[in-house]
Length: 325
View 1: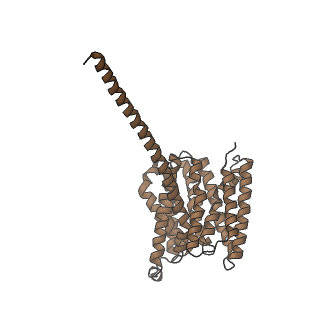
View 2: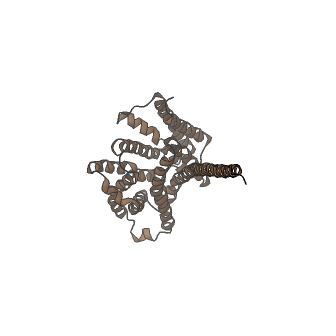
View 3: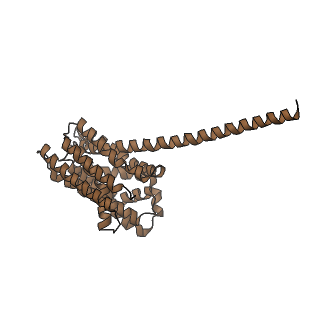
């Protein structure tokens, strides 16, 4: 065999190896990209199902619990789960940030858990879920009014459209369900205002605090009051503990607290990291769909006008999230 033949053969082997390496590298990159795409969609679908299901879980929990008991247990169970996972993260929080963590805890969790529970004693879970979609609109509104955060004309239009849809939804719901007191929808709207204030506080004052530390820090000031409230509601009385409906109610509240509050908070933070804020915010559009399906399966009424009002609200949310060209 000549030297030339040997050289050509060696070059062929080298080219073959390089080609295989390039193909393997491209395949690895493609696999990683596909895994990332699949992962973010799995997170989105999971969060939409979990958060969309939380409203029917609240409704079912109220069969065996009072609103005050439900809210207290939700805080206690969620807080204990978060403490087990990330209590050591709070040691790095600056003492000047604690006042904002306390306010954030009250606005983001402490008040809404009770307000939603009271709301669903009178209005359907699907309506509560749709009204919850006002949160991004109220975030923009309060950002402008309280925190002097600049908003575009399109965002303002989106807020107005969203509230028009809200008025239609509540009015049509009152006609469809005359036996329900739709003034209780105000509790959900107040909750969305609390959420809106909370988002702005986190953005303004807690931007450099780790998300898990914020979550744990939020529950520290509200855990003890929640335990006291639970005692005062008579939850530990014999007639309450022997109630036939208590077992299922506790099961629903544990699922709601562990998955809908503690785990979902961590997964949403992860979703933001592996995707984009715009993609992550699409949870807002999918949650009401899940909630309405659960409501219909549970025998709730949901008219075409209410569906139209829901579409108006979500369109307002879409405009409010749309960036300037």
